[in-house]
Image 1: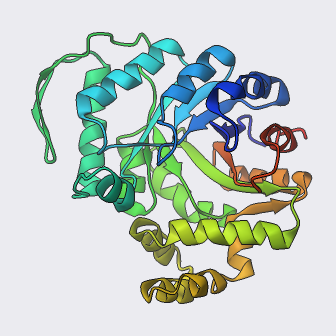
Image 2 (image 1 turned 60 degrees about the vertical axis):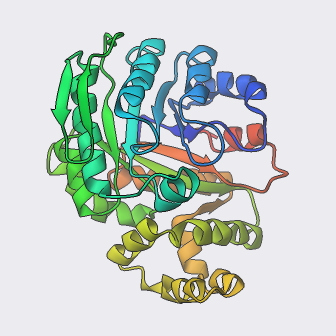
Length: 321
């Protein structure tokens, strides 16, 4: 059984300043970690900065910060500041994000994603160690940057990874991987690519969960989430690589502009594989299945009905119930 048990913050449906009491209670409920995400809501660092004060026993991490949407020096400064605010309790997860977030929302070309993450990782290794960086990487150049506030403890650097190339980069040059949108069984396919470079490599997995909700409602929520994510090219390629042929009708309908048809084409079995739902006790057992297959840090991402009390969901999904 894992000794780590994480959750995604901030929680949906509650203004960030009002989440203090929920986050303060997390360590006593058995949570060890709080990890942020960054897409279209909060940035990745502000919720962690608040949590570092509200719950100083929690380990904090980003899952993930896009490598494209901040300049290299700005990203190093943000990471160093969080590492100073939570010494020894912060991990930085970086990744490509997606063409939607990078190109459509931030007007930045989504080019050479593997090289961009690799170069950013190499730059951060040097910058966070206090080195003066003057280098021409494949995707950017840095001219004489030295971090002015080097953290006493350099945070672990994790790479968001889906397919073999990025998974191997996470293990070879990173301290581990952040994985996302996969079943517990899929972990057995993914984890060996990371662990070939060391059994101590961390694997953080975001696990989408809808506890204590009837199957029809949970599957409806799950279908909408799957449709929103797995039609994005990077996630579609991931599931094609995994061999999830059951999603082919969804992809076809989506390409044809048939959004309702795409939703209807997602089989129950795929929803049940990718979304943890059912009674809270059953959800906890399914989350533990991820750790049994190689995940070191499960990070729960609740996506329940909008009228559900987030504090009740946090309590329901706590490791001991």
